Image 1 (cartoon, one colour):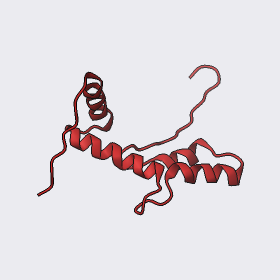
Image 2: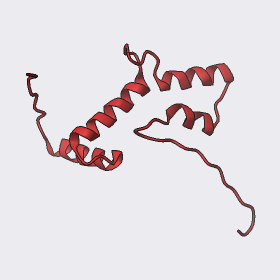
Image 3: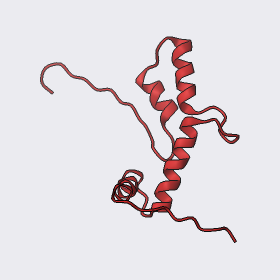
Length: 95
């Protein structure tokens, strides 16, 4: 049986957990922590499961191309836990 580890809850942590539940749409702390951890690991990389993170990939793309568009940024950073979309709209005069 796995040993249970308790996290000491401070007021700041309570607020973070509550905000994380809201931000992720998860109804439990464990679900919110899982979603946040999964996203962080895919962004950062450097693990056997995700050797190259999305942030590194985005930086390489910008270096190779000279710049990246908002669409390309959304493509790299969007994940199931935090979908990222870009849309552009402008108008001149009255709509």
